[in-house]
Image (cartoon, rainbow, N blue to C red; front, top):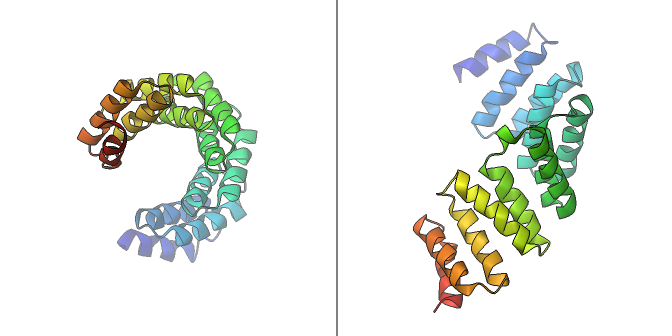
Length: 199
């Protein structure tokens, strides 16, 4: 709260300071005041429309506020300036997934992995696996879910969704094993599925 007060006081004099508005946005974001955070980021972008940090935060906030078209546009602006940004491709892929454009999402995840596999956390593989499964490509999805689990073994969601891919591939035993593991890891929906398919 004190940091916010200090920054607002500074903003009265430093009206053209991009970094100041970015810091105000970060404070609002920590407080889960997303609309206020976005207002401050918009002020930062009025001063410097190509500021990558501001665009990243804008895309993230719009994503949280379910403005997928706005988030998509921000990521595309970032990629024009930084065409080798693995993080921007990952973010753009997540937006495309939520817009039900699974093939574009997969293309973005592929590009992110190609550019910088050191940033290929369990989330990249999980999200790509999920997109593949939504397209009915369960054999391919299994590989990505497996890699995600390899990188983070306690990710119950990955075990749960890998179970579904196994189920659709007629591997009922494997599916029930994965669902059981998901349940052990605290993914409660797994037990409903086990009762339905594994009794």
